[in-house]
Image (cartoon, rainbow, N blue to C red; front, side, top):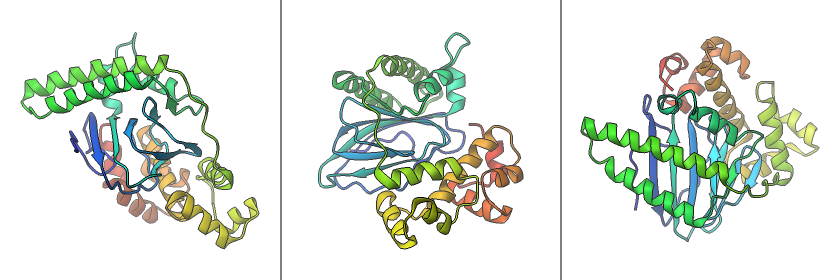
Length: 284
């Protein structure tokens, strides 16, 4: 079973307001670390997974939800790949949040408040999550009608769903904060906090008192990608935030840690599908 309303790898097509998915796989593929330029809210229904969000190591279960803010690095790995992996999740653009907000109810501010202080995991309970999944299925089914009036109606339906979802998350019990996963978790924290600065393998090995060979091996085993790939991915996430805030692409290049624009341009386009200049003109 796989019922995506819209899908573009781990991103939404430019200009799309929201997306909602309910998917089930028997042989899920592992994901690399990645980030979005929109909010993601994720619920697991079946399966056993490990989620690393920034440097937090989490094992969500049915009854819990994860909220990933824009630019937040995260990765899902499957602890029991042979088991069925079922989840539903939402992608929410800033434009959609602004469209659905009123001065008395700012949806963006409410989402920001949820993840304030590095909190990503929430526990609304099994019964409530099953209710939310059933309502998500109704929105997915309604999206099959692409007539203008149906699209408008489903947008309103999604806005009502989001308001209810936020109220559920705001009232939910907070699970214990996930611990940092040993040395590699500390390394992720260090890179996340210093990605704008020069970071070399020699420097990281010296800071963490480990040989370069062991550092490369442990990092790849923990994250599924090389240190270089992770740093570049994190820098592009920072650049996206800067450009959204009005920073010119050439300045964002320098502020996120790249030393030349051509390398920045290639890396940005490879990870987003568009150039930095085009990204700055795309509604978010």
